[in-house]
Image (cartoon, rainbow, N blue to C red; front, side, top):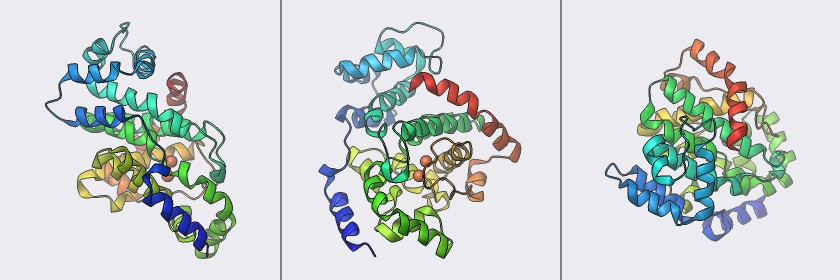
Length: 286
Ligand SMILES: [Fe+2]
Ligand SMILES: [Fe+2]
């Protein structure tokens, strides 16, 4: 139906230069921290090479969301007091803003909306992980939450030209916005997002979160829990009206994900009712 658009998107997907980039230090830090024998000193050395990122992290360390009440004035101290994985989350927060804090035309998202949505989904995902005693993945779902919709930054311009057809397809065939997106343009924002993460050399768990956040039931078994947590957080944030664009009304909470995350109805309600509080804290780290 839109073969020229499919063609142009294929070119973008095949040509990594055209996808958004991040400073190399980000994948370096993420992969260093993933290593169980990580050397904290080396991580700190890597971060302080970049003055802008360092300044940003120190600011985040002393925000109400991350602070443990002690003033932090160096990356070394931040790692000791807050933990290496928190510092890694801050590196991602400090560097992805430039990619996500844009007007996302086709999806009807004003400047800042996709960024705000990402930070909200990150914080809600982390709350779910901590509620379910999954501290081992609380940092991964936080990072994955921030960037889960990064593919939208690439697809946005194309959605603009095909939006009517996408909506018609949704109505006529009674399918979700993502399914129609793929049918009309040849790609959905999850696939494009996965490609962006390949370019960034992010680990498989984060790629799985981006790829399957709308279809958690299809995620590889070993990543089912983190994908499901971000899926639930994403859907709850949309229900709360955070980051609703043109696709906002076509989302559903997948029962498989609620199961995989081990959430009861009461827990879901509690997480949902805490979203206004989360947004208040989010204001400080955006
Ligand atoms: Fe999405
Ligand atoms: Fe989303």
